[in-house]
Amino acid sequence: MAADAPAAALFDVDGTLVDTAYLHTLAWWEALRQYGHLVDAAPVHRAIGMGSDQLLDHLLGADRDRSDDEAISAAHLALYAQFWPGLRAFDGAADLLRACAGRGWRVVLCTSASGRELDVLRGALDADDAVFAVTDSDSVAVSKPAPDLVHSALERASAPAGRAVFVGDSVWDVRAANRAGTPCVGVETGGFAGEELRGAGAVEVHSSVGDLLASLDDSVLAHPRGGDR
Image 1 (cartoon, rainbow, N blue to C red):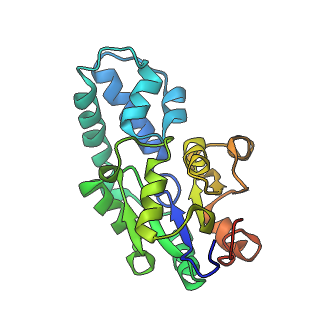
Image 2 (cartoon, rainbow, N blue to C red):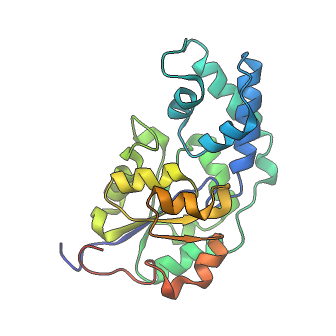
Protein backbone atom coordinates (compact mmCIF):
# COMPACT_ATOMS: atom_id res chain seq x y z
CA MET A 1 0.00 0.00 0.00
CA ALA A 2 1.35 3.45 -0.90
CA ALA A 3 2.41 5.37 2.19
CA ASP A 4 1.06 8.57 0.66
CA ALA A 5 -2.44 7.18 0.01
CA PRO A 6 -5.20 9.29 1.60
CA ALA A 7 -6.04 8.32 5.17
CA ALA A 8 -9.63 8.47 6.42
CA ALA A 9 -11.13 8.82 9.89
CA LEU A 10 -14.69 7.55 9.59
CA PHE A 11 -17.17 8.58 12.27
CA ASP A 12 -20.55 7.18 13.10
CA VAL A 13 -22.80 10.07 14.16
CA ASP A 14 -25.85 8.81 16.12
CA GLY A 15 -24.73 7.86 19.62
CA THR A 16 -21.07 8.51 18.82
CA LEU A 17 -20.87 12.23 18.08
CA VAL A 18 -24.44 13.26 18.95
CA ASP A 19 -26.33 12.06 22.06
CA THR A 20 -29.20 10.21 20.37
CA ALA A 21 -28.98 6.49 21.21
CA TYR A 22 -31.59 6.51 23.96
CA LEU A 23 -33.85 8.87 22.01
CA HIS A 24 -33.86 6.36 19.16
CA THR A 25 -34.64 3.62 21.66
CA LEU A 26 -37.73 5.45 22.90
CA ALA A 27 -38.88 6.29 19.38
CA TRP A 28 -38.50 2.72 18.10
CA TRP A 29 -40.14 1.28 21.24
CA GLU A 30 -43.20 3.49 20.77
CA ALA A 31 -43.35 3.01 16.98
CA LEU A 32 -43.34 -0.76 17.45
CA ARG A 33 -46.01 -0.51 20.15
CA GLN A 34 -48.25 1.54 17.86
CA TYR A 35 -48.25 -1.33 15.38
CA GLY A 36 -48.90 -4.04 17.92
CA HIS A 37 -45.34 -5.16 18.66
CA LEU A 38 -44.74 -5.12 22.42
CA VAL A 39 -40.96 -5.33 22.53
CA ASP A 40 -39.09 -4.65 25.77
CA ALA A 41 -36.98 -1.49 25.77
CA ALA A 42 -33.73 -3.33 26.55
CA PRO A 43 -33.55 -5.34 23.31
CA VAL A 44 -34.62 -2.25 21.36
CA HIS A 45 -31.69 -0.36 22.84
CA ARG A 46 -29.33 -3.24 22.02
CA ALA A 47 -30.37 -2.99 18.36
CA ILE A 48 -29.65 0.74 18.06
CA GLY A 49 -26.81 1.22 15.60
CA MET A 50 -28.38 -1.01 13.00
CA GLY A 51 -30.19 0.53 10.06
CA SER A 52 -33.98 0.24 10.15
CA ASP A 53 -34.01 -2.67 7.67
CA GLN A 54 -31.70 -4.73 9.88
CA LEU A 55 -33.23 -3.55 13.15
CA LEU A 56 -36.74 -4.74 12.36
CA ASP A 57 -35.45 -8.14 11.22
CA HIS A 58 -33.39 -8.38 14.40
CA LEU A 59 -36.27 -7.50 16.73
CA LEU A 60 -39.24 -9.05 14.94
CA GLY A 61 -37.70 -11.91 12.97
CA ALA A 62 -36.84 -12.18 9.30
CA ASP A 63 -39.85 -14.40 8.53
CA ARG A 64 -42.46 -11.93 9.80
CA ASP A 65 -45.21 -10.10 7.90
CA ARG A 66 -43.41 -7.04 6.52
CA SER A 67 -46.49 -5.12 5.42
CA ASP A 68 -46.13 -2.58 8.26
CA ASP A 69 -42.36 -2.07 7.98
CA GLU A 70 -42.49 1.24 6.13
CA ALA A 71 -45.18 2.57 8.45
CA ILE A 72 -43.20 1.55 11.55
CA SER A 73 -40.08 3.22 10.21
CA ALA A 74 -42.05 6.37 9.38
CA ALA A 75 -43.56 6.39 12.87
CA HIS A 76 -40.09 6.05 14.38
CA LEU A 77 -38.84 9.03 12.37
CA ALA A 78 -41.85 11.16 13.33
CA LEU A 79 -41.44 10.31 17.01
CA TYR A 80 -37.69 10.87 16.91
CA ALA A 81 -38.16 14.22 15.17
CA GLN A 82 -39.88 15.53 18.29
CA PHE A 83 -36.45 15.47 19.96
CA TRP A 84 -34.64 17.34 17.20
CA PRO A 85 -34.82 20.85 18.73
CA GLY A 86 -32.91 19.60 21.78
CA LEU A 87 -30.26 17.43 20.11
CA ARG A 88 -26.73 18.14 21.25
CA ALA A 89 -23.31 16.92 20.29
CA PHE A 90 -21.22 15.24 22.96
CA ASP A 91 -18.62 17.43 24.62
CA GLY A 92 -15.48 17.39 22.51
CA ALA A 93 -17.13 15.90 19.40
CA ALA A 94 -16.55 18.87 17.09
CA ASP A 95 -13.06 19.44 18.49
CA LEU A 96 -12.23 15.76 17.87
CA LEU A 97 -13.18 16.05 14.20
CA ARG A 98 -11.12 19.21 13.84
CA ALA A 99 -8.15 17.62 15.61
CA CYS A 100 -8.27 14.60 13.29
CA ALA A 101 -8.53 16.81 10.21
CA GLY A 102 -5.61 18.88 11.50
CA ARG A 103 -3.50 15.74 11.82
CA GLY A 104 -4.03 14.82 8.18
CA TRP A 105 -7.08 12.55 8.27
CA ARG A 106 -9.89 12.92 5.76
CA VAL A 107 -12.86 13.05 8.11
CA VAL A 108 -15.96 11.27 6.83
CA LEU A 109 -19.32 11.15 8.60
CA CYS A 110 -20.64 7.62 8.13
CA THR A 111 -24.28 7.51 9.18
CA SER A 112 -27.51 5.57 8.67
CA ALA A 113 -29.39 8.89 8.77
CA SER A 114 -30.38 10.75 5.62
CA GLY A 115 -32.32 13.77 4.42
CA ARG A 116 -33.62 16.20 7.03
CA GLU A 117 -32.44 13.96 9.90
CA LEU A 118 -28.86 14.17 8.64
CA ASP A 119 -29.15 17.96 8.30
CA VAL A 120 -30.29 18.20 11.93
CA LEU A 121 -27.42 16.02 13.15
CA ARG A 122 -24.87 18.07 11.22
CA GLY A 123 -26.38 21.24 12.66
CA ALA A 124 -26.07 19.88 16.21
CA LEU A 125 -22.48 18.83 15.53
CA ASP A 126 -21.53 22.17 13.93
CA ALA A 127 -18.23 20.91 12.52
CA ASP A 128 -18.72 20.94 8.75
CA ASP A 129 -15.45 22.84 8.40
CA ALA A 130 -13.62 19.66 9.44
CA VAL A 131 -15.66 17.21 7.34
CA PHE A 132 -14.21 15.99 4.06
CA ALA A 133 -17.26 13.93 3.01
CA VAL A 134 -20.49 12.35 4.22
CA THR A 135 -22.03 9.02 3.37
CA ASP A 136 -25.55 8.03 4.45
CA SER A 137 -28.21 5.36 4.16
CA ASP A 138 -29.19 6.54 0.68
CA SER A 139 -25.74 5.46 -0.55
CA VAL A 140 -26.09 1.74 0.26
CA ALA A 141 -28.47 -1.14 -0.24
CA VAL A 142 -27.83 -2.81 3.14
CA SER A 143 -27.16 -1.02 6.43
CA LYS A 144 -24.93 -1.87 9.41
CA PRO A 145 -23.73 -4.36 10.52
CA ALA A 146 -23.17 -5.05 6.81
CA PRO A 147 -19.96 -3.32 5.65
CA ASP A 148 -21.60 -1.40 2.79
CA LEU A 149 -21.70 1.96 4.59
CA VAL A 150 -18.02 1.70 5.50
CA HIS A 151 -17.13 0.78 1.91
CA SER A 152 -19.07 3.83 0.72
CA ALA A 153 -17.24 6.09 3.19
CA LEU A 154 -13.87 4.75 2.02
CA GLU A 155 -14.84 5.46 -1.57
CA ARG A 156 -15.86 9.02 -0.69
CA ALA A 157 -12.46 9.55 0.93
CA SER A 158 -10.55 7.71 -1.83
CA ALA A 159 -8.84 5.84 1.00
CA PRO A 160 -8.00 2.12 1.24
CA ALA A 161 -9.33 0.16 4.21
CA GLY A 162 -5.84 -0.19 5.68
CA ARG A 163 -5.43 3.59 5.77
CA ALA A 164 -8.65 4.20 7.69
CA VAL A 165 -10.04 4.05 11.21
CA PHE A 166 -13.72 3.89 12.10
CA VAL A 167 -15.07 5.42 15.33
CA GLY A 168 -18.39 4.10 16.62
CA ASP A 169 -20.44 3.43 19.74
CA SER A 170 -22.10 0.07 19.07
CA VAL A 171 -21.07 -3.52 18.39
CA TRP A 172 -22.80 -3.09 15.02
CA ASP A 173 -20.34 -0.32 14.15
CA VAL A 174 -17.40 -2.51 15.13
CA ARG A 175 -18.64 -5.47 13.11
CA ALA A 176 -19.34 -3.34 10.03
CA ALA A 177 -15.86 -1.80 10.19
CA ASN A 178 -14.14 -5.13 10.71
CA ARG A 179 -16.02 -6.70 7.81
CA ALA A 180 -14.73 -3.85 5.64
CA GLY A 181 -11.16 -4.49 6.83
CA THR A 182 -10.99 -1.27 8.84
CA PRO A 183 -10.04 -1.10 12.54
CA CYS A 184 -12.63 0.39 14.86
CA VAL A 185 -12.22 2.61 17.90
CA GLY A 186 -15.15 2.27 20.29
CA VAL A 187 -16.73 4.84 22.55
CA GLU A 188 -19.16 3.91 25.32
CA THR A 189 -21.55 6.82 24.72
CA GLY A 190 -24.28 4.67 23.15
CA GLY A 191 -24.62 2.35 26.13
CA PHE A 192 -22.47 -0.59 25.01
CA ALA A 193 -19.83 -1.51 27.58
CA GLY A 194 -16.15 -1.47 26.78
CA GLU A 195 -15.91 -5.26 27.16
CA GLU A 196 -18.64 -5.72 24.56
CA LEU A 197 -16.96 -3.36 22.11
CA ARG A 198 -13.60 -5.06 22.58
CA GLY A 199 -15.26 -8.46 22.27
CA ALA A 200 -16.72 -7.41 18.94
CA GLY A 201 -13.22 -6.46 17.76
CA ALA A 202 -12.61 -2.81 18.69
CA VAL A 203 -8.87 -2.05 18.78
CA GLU A 204 -9.32 0.46 21.61
CA VAL A 205 -12.22 1.80 23.67
CA HIS A 206 -12.82 5.18 25.31
CA SER A 207 -15.52 6.28 27.71
CA SER A 208 -16.47 9.22 25.47
CA VAL A 209 -15.32 11.21 22.46
CA GLY A 210 -13.98 13.76 24.93
CA ASP A 211 -11.82 11.04 26.46
CA LEU A 212 -10.67 9.99 22.99
CA LEU A 213 -9.75 13.60 22.22
CA ALA A 214 -7.76 13.88 25.45
CA SER A 215 -5.97 10.60 24.64
CA LEU A 216 -5.47 11.28 20.94
CA ASP A 217 -1.67 11.21 21.07
CA ASP A 218 -1.83 7.61 22.34
CA SER A 219 -4.57 6.47 19.95
CA VAL A 220 -4.46 4.82 16.53
CA LEU A 221 -5.87 8.19 15.44
CA ALA A 222 -2.75 10.04 16.58
CA HIS A 223 -1.50 10.40 13.00
CA PRO A 224 -2.08 8.61 9.69
CA ARG A 225 0.50 5.89 9.17
CA GLY A 226 1.83 4.39 5.99
CA GLY A 227 1.04 0.81 5.08
CA ASP A 228 -1.30 -1.63 6.79
CA ARG A 229 -2.12 -1.18 10.43
